[in-house]
Amino acid sequence: MNIKQFRYSSDNLGYLLYAEKSAIAIDGGAVDQICSFAGDNGLNIEYVTNTHSHPDHTMGLKSLLGRSGAVYLDHNTLPAKGFIGLAGENIDVYHTPGHTDDSVSFHAGNFLITGDTLFNGTVGNCFSGDLFAFYNSIVRLISFPKDTIIYAGHDYVEYSMSFARLIEPGNGDIDSFLKKYNPELVSSKLEDEFRVNPYLRFNDPEMISVLKAKGLPVSTEFERWESLMGLG
Ligand SMILES: [Fe+2]
Image 1 (cartoon, rainbow, N blue to C red):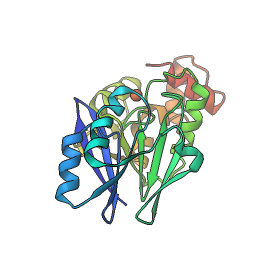
Image 2 (image 1 turned 90 degrees about the vertical axis):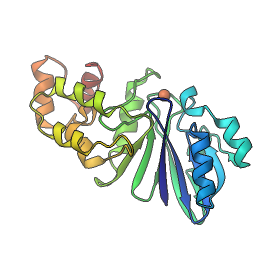
Image 3 (image 1 turned 180 degrees about the vertical axis):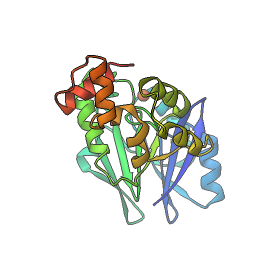
Image 4 (image 1 turned 30 degrees about the horizontal axis):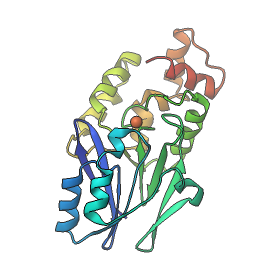
């Protein structure tokens, strides 16, 4: 499975996944760029779907469906089926509520498309209000192999690392994470996320010390997640 990232608006990121000549657009707001790329590469956009229903992710949907003739796949019903078939390959679909109740993530090959659930360097706001569901979603996503590549719904890398540095001023991995940052292709490996993303570090001894020093609850993994989510 191949993946092409498209940047649109100021920091939104959308994707075209393709195998052989078949493609699926996920959060296809960059309509012109997506249609050009598909045309240049002889790709047939068979499906269009979203990571969740926020308007900055669903924008362009009608236009892209009209121009491509693709079939719309409702992200609300995809997790029950579990996968999308594309040219004989599977894209697995996981319900990952937390940012919103309808958030989903996609896994294919060695990569994850995480929408606004997990960003490079941070996690999304918990607009659903269900921190426990969000925690379970994050636990699911970080259980993929450590070399899994994270493709998120926004580029928040620089802001995220400023915040990570506020929480852990002594974390030397933040500089190397920023050195790898490329606004033209925003991605990170899960193993690097574990080193710098504060919200994935609930089992890291240094982060636990930080939380303890702030007088926050640290007895269970979920308590530490709640403590971290309350920081900012
Ligand atoms: Fe969102």
